[in-house]
Length: 216
Length: 196
Image (cartoon, rainbow over all chains, first blue to last red; front, side):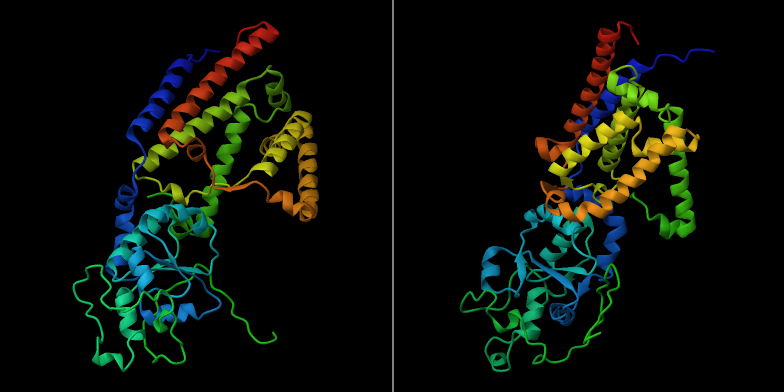
């Protein structure tokens, strides 16, 4: 039987070259990874499939069957000024460190990213997709929109009223005399006292959950 | 971008056929490499037979290079690949138990299945022992839950341990593999006085 040629040395050199080339080329950054994934995911942003109405977020907050994670991706001064109850302060550059936690989330987990408008939260959503494609959404219109709905009482309408949502620039357009954090009434509006608001539900759970109640 | 959702594109039956084909090819390569023979497998522990170590490590290194080149070129989303979380202490104890079982029985779980496929009687007995071990473990793990979850380090990989780029780790692992191949060859020559 004809003996096969000895390819050990060429094989070893090929492996070394391929590994060396990889070290030289490096792995893609988060931005490059998003560019790779964009053809598949960009349409979800453009068709606004992942932007949820404030009323839907309020329903999620009050739904005991949902494992809700709210990432507030704004800078600390804004976070101190006003935030939602149980939201987590998560600057964009800290999101990669959340990878392991995201992987361990249950099937009924929903992540909602919030910022003053939609700009920063959309950046955060892109990063989350790169990190691990969790079931993540963005608060439509940001906290400016949220405060327009839940943060302006009838008496306040005459003083500062509702903020304009046009031309988003990343700023909080509502003014607070004090940095109230999550002690503002709109940080967790009472669902029974807020007006009913119709919305198109966009949140889809990874797995359907069985809701049970009473003694059964 | 991979990994692809086979169930979505081929349906449940189609995807299962793909899994079956991959499993068959894997078993075929194991058998072709001599992994269905307990004497060859056990020989690696005595440095008399080094094909197993070489085939396994070559496969690991080639897969590593292909996976990370694919992620570098945007062909594969590495985050979608399941990485087993590290539980250090049970991992070490489990490794030792498996090593002892490997030396005593001459097989690891996968290779015992390969040997059963070629109707080797020792492989069948090993597989029975394996199943008994799985049942025993499953029934008793509840008593050692604290130890079972000890040393949890999450999705811990070499780049995180060494704080270097993935590409550099790949070079190091390739060098380690090549050094090991050479070292084992020399060791065998030193012990048994014959060149490979």
